[in-house]
Amino acid sequence: MKKILDVLSEEMGKAFEAAGYDSALGRVTLSNRPDLCEYQCNGAMAGAKKYHKAPIVIAGEVASHLADHPVFQEAVAVAPGFLNLKLRESCLLGILQEMASSAKYGLEMPEHPRKILIDYGGANVAKPLHVGHLRPAIIGESIKRICRYAGHEVIGDVHLGDWGTPIGMVITQLQERKPDLVYFDENYEGVYPEETPITEAEFAEIYPLASARSKEDPEFKARALEATRKFQQGVPGYRALWKHIVDVSKVDLKKNYDSLHVEFDLWKGESDVNDLIPEMVDYMKKGGWAYISDGALVVDVKEETDTKEVPPCMILKSDGASLYNTTDLATIMERMRLYDPDEIIYITDKRQDLYFEQVFRCARKTKLVGPETVLKFLGHGTMNGSDGKPFKTRDGGVMRLDVLVEETKKEMYRKIREGRQMPEEEARAVADIVALSALKYGDLSNQAAKDYVFDIDRFTSFEGDTGPYILYTIVRIKSILSKYSEQGGRMEGLALLEAGSGLEKELQMALVQFGTMVQNAAEEIAPHRVCAYVYDLANAFNRFYHETKILGEEDVKRREGLIALLVLTRDVMETCIDLLGFEAPEKM
Image (cartoon, rainbow, N blue to C red; front, side, top):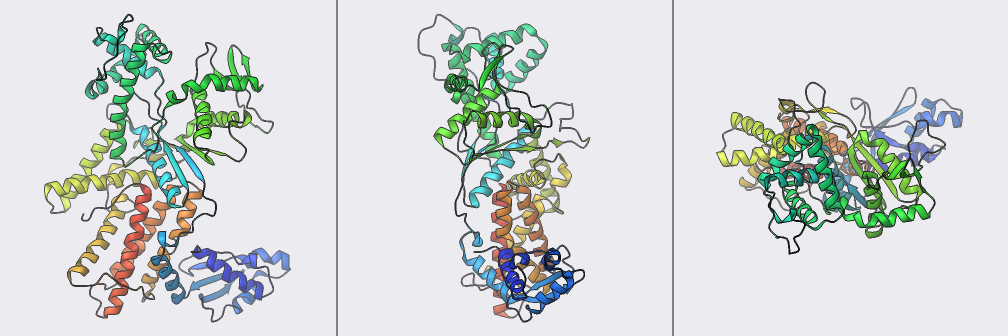
């Protein structure tokens, strides 16, 4: 099914051609003055210079070919040369009917679907998730869902940081607590226990202590670095402990991600490419790209067109140790071999822009990827407190992610209990669902690159541009449909009808923009497009609802047509929130 703007542009192009002008001038857009018209075409303005005519003359000639048109109810030329357009209700109905009867509401599938790999977790093993992990997780999850819905093959990878100093810190702290563990006996030659020596509770306690000590105690930090070296170099006891720590950490990470409805296809980490690094280094040396500079192995990535300094990409430190650059490049190498994606998208803090520029240039220069492979960095802004600085706890520390989620649930539960009569268990279940919408929508409604202020009062409000408002609208529709069924109304074979009022037409027009929105959101990797659309759709429905008798409509056929419109609105809105990564309850 063609996008509505393509349909309208095609018809407008025919009118331009009939008037003697280039059909390419007939591009139609949504009106930026909805008080005057529904759509507009500015082609006469663009054609004035080419045809040496006043734009208003061109617009008038084109408008004369649109009289009694089956698509346009009204086409008016206005100074200095715009064409103001209104859609015929019968045309709009035809598009809606096709939309309602088509898979994915008529969304056009790509002729050449792409294979896209999204790197969007970035959590570090051994460290609990904090509020800074919220944005990459939910932005990446939404982009994955949008691109899949748009017809592409998408692979989501958490890409864990499981090969660094935090694990060495935990091992060192554990050794102080339990020095007799067999893992620390260098003479031990037996099989190491399958049962982990560190519980989830101990794990949550040990890392903060070890991290604090590492900052204050140089001797402890040195031992932690030595422990890191030992597990990385394969010392058996330390490597066995590393595996236990990774396994325990994954349980906690999955629990946190599950609470956010974030799911990964791959749970790979830096360690997965450790054995690839020597091969990659040798390849870069033999290719003549990598050379020694001040003891370190580097690849120049500077380009003639650079207006700022772009340092070389370091492959190995002077002591031979690998860096994030090393593992990220080796990961690209592995991904191309295992999955051969058309595109790899990285989602992390926008302050890493230069870092990814270096890595991408290095990957291209050394031919780890071909020129046809897209490497894309989507840098997100920070979630800030009311002071405009990165969000902190009341005592100034970095808040754990699970604490933020729990506090949002508590606030949502308080508001639900305050304004509604609902059994305790049901109220808590509903609060959990609505709280997730508050968190996710509050974040995703902003452009990813922008910073935003976390305002729990605003995010959990049932009014305005919020997740709870969107869910409340969906639940309102569900309630009407439920009452309709209880009154004996039939849900099968319902037929959409031409709009009976201006507000009904506004709702129908909002619905038919769905396909355009999804394609734009996928192309731009922009979840905020979905938020803006579903908010506009919710507003269009609520205006229509407040001015329209639905269940009280006496004409049976008309009532059924209104119910059909509600069903389509509900389904489209629920699809939108699924793309954003949350769901609606049955009641609120």
